[in-house]
Length: 313
Image (cartoon, rainbow, N blue to C red; front, side, top):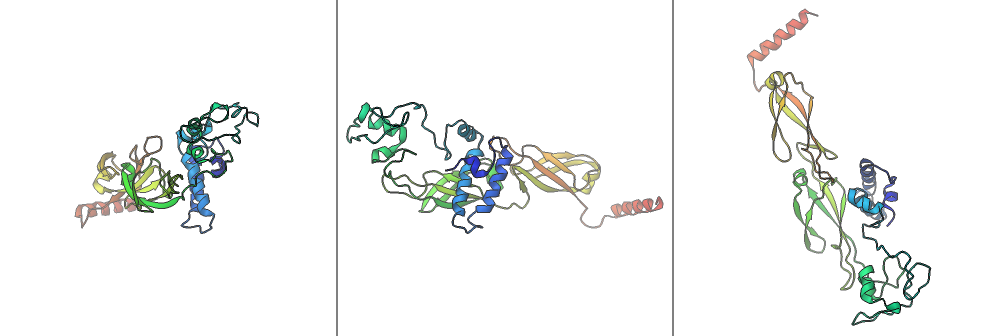
């Protein structure tokens, strides 16, 4: 896996907005639904893995500090300068060529280092005769294939941070919590929920693409929402209380007198969840509505207003 900054094409000091913009551009270009190039799926998955790290403040910090690798896995640290097993080759590196693995009892290899110690550091691959990550071992356990699935969610489900059940290829049902800050088309990697690779192999991952369903009222702009709200003529002229729909139920807000159509009010915290735990805002734009049916008094008033304006012209 390449450096996630290189994958998304952003500098190390890029802002959260720049990272998201770069990811969305790549996701649009390489999504398998629209790009039939055989390599597009690989590029799409690579972009999602990079965004999983750089799009998360905590993971990004861990990567920048060298605590996790480009796939989000913890790095083995604290062994700098270790001379290998029994004074191995390569200066400060590990030398496994002379390591003798002993079954039944976790015996030690050269230098007195036990098998359990090696497995604790580098994983179960050593118990199967392989080598750790990046060590050039002689064929560790196979890894299962990744599987793809889609999950359609409503804005209400995102706002409520609901847990949803989804069926994965192979007949497995899992509960998925839609993550904060998710965007339409983003793919979430569910580690270990892909295809199996035999009794000793590591399972693949499930790549879950999120589809945000269109909403009849709200338009999504990042974590913010926009909606048009009908404002009765009398309340537009005199001011009053206006009921505004939100994803968690309608709320009331006061509008001042002489409010025209197209005026936008901001309701803070009524948008979608963000990764940092805060929420976006809801922008409600007024649309002044006339009374239903004929209103003689209103018609008379409008006629007199027109005549008065004509007389001053």
